[in-house]
Image (cartoon, rainbow, N blue to C red; front, side, top):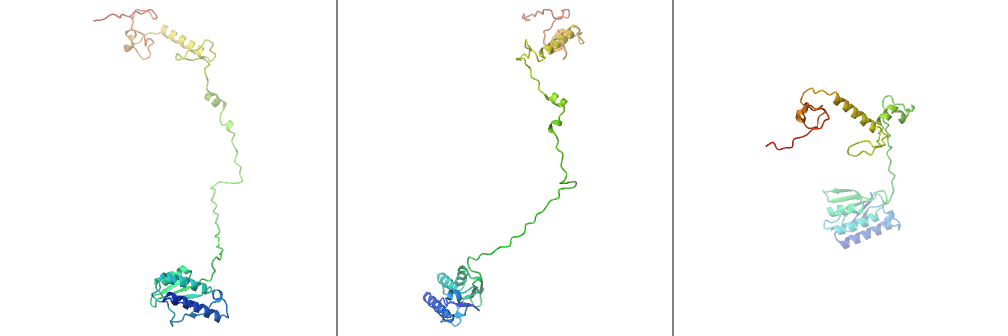
Length: 246
């Protein structure tokens, strides 16, 4: 099993033990560089079990685990003893599968088999295309017949909606001009003729036409005119008494 065991009882002792471990690994591998070829079980001198001391600080553990990472080949294992400081240092150094043995106070971590900066290709999940049913009776091969917009309206609809403008200079009185060509003059003449004819043939049905607007019917032709005597002929001059009644 590939193991590096480092003594962290003191700063100087840790550095010295790790340097000796490097030298021993190089000697065993015939002078090869420990950072690339080291894969042996190396135990630092001073502690038969090679455990890290509990008094190691976070800075000491971090520096030593970083150097142990450099010495190990991919797949190598580091064993440390130092509680939370050793565990955190191993994780920050890059070791994977860091396991803490609470009974013995041992922290074990493994250097991953992959190198830093290695690219991995992720499998792209195939996109499932869901096609929705167009519904009953839908046929993509059938061309819909286009409707001509001009055929939607008949000639009667067009003529009924056409706006007719008067050519008369209509003022507040809405009277036709002298040179009327829009038909307003003819309409006014016909209306006046009908009113005159109705007045000539008018016979009061209520008998209150002469009393004034307060007593006249809604359709009375005398609406708006002053009261008059029954004997007065229609259209004659009406004289009003403006004298004081008191």
